Amino acid sequence: MSNISEISEGEKMSTNEAALPQSTVRVAQADPDGILLVIHAGAGNRGKKDTPERRAQVEQDLNRALEAGYALLEQGAPAEDAVCAAIRVMEDAPEFNAGRGAALTSEGIVSMDSCLMTGVDGEVGSACGLTTSKNPINVARAIKEKTKHVMFAKPGDNLLKEWSIELCDSEYFITPARQESLREAQSNGDEWEKHGTIGAVARDASGNIAAGTSTGGITNQMPGRVGDSPLPGCGTYANNDSVAISCTGIGEAFVKEVAAHQVSDRVLYAKEDPVEAAKAALDGVARHHGDGGMIVVPAHGDGAMVFNSEMMNCGWKSPKGSYVQS
Image 1 (cartoon, rainbow, N blue to C red):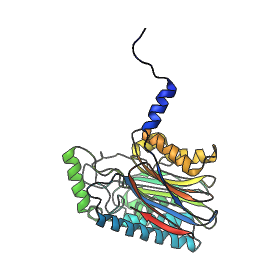
Image 2 (spheres, rainbow, N blue to C red):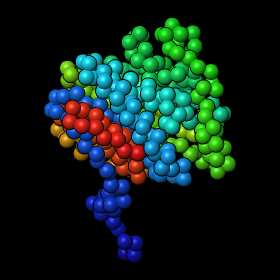
Image 3 (cartoon, rainbow, N blue to C red):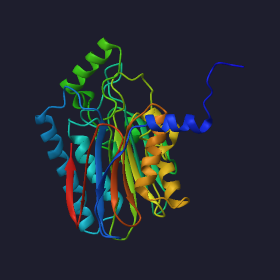
Image 4 (tube, helix red, strand yellow):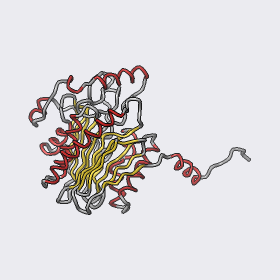
């Protein structure tokens, strides 16, 4: 008879579940079928660079992004217009890991990814490995609207010009803060920036929803690495019958969990509440040793910001009010 104690499958599950981090929920209030915009700018743990001054700047940039996107919703514009407008503001803000101020690869350059999806028709555009596009979200939209394809990897400058994409030299994207982060990461043998992805989800006056995500990836990442953000169903997803969702966090874990699509399926087929669906998906992310957050706008009702990391930069705006946190 063995003296090794045996643990039942139920006990194993209980042990694993007990170790999972608890998710924090912030509700984005809205009229049942009213306009709503929710944004995020990364989730993770507070570090030495998370100063009061930086947090104040982040909140200012979040408010500017909300204003830009929400103004379009008020004018009756489609949800994807609001999503792209909000994301462009954040891409232009060097505090965030997208566009100007994107994380640097091990080679000291940017490699940016983006995705845009509309729930009314399931159309999607995705781009990865961008190095010259001022606003990567515009590339995702161009792919969705100007080609028959879904995803492009490293589209050339001539093609980007055909799509009327504004291009910038590499110096535009590289900031002193990102250079310092790269030096630290290479000195410590680890990545520093893992949670700086930005995203937006919206519902317009017609009841259509859309989602967009933009990222610079991970500081000191290997050339060619792609995370969840540009992968439809992993970091970005929208379906008018369920939810629009954008994710941020440890990308590999979100890919393994197919996190964004999982939330949609839970809402659509299991009839779960969007918040509970997001929490369940984040539990799955945690089982893959990841953390992060999600913003969710359903076809009807309130939206939500859900995260199992220490913090998430996020905010929302609707006729019922507005809110930002950093």
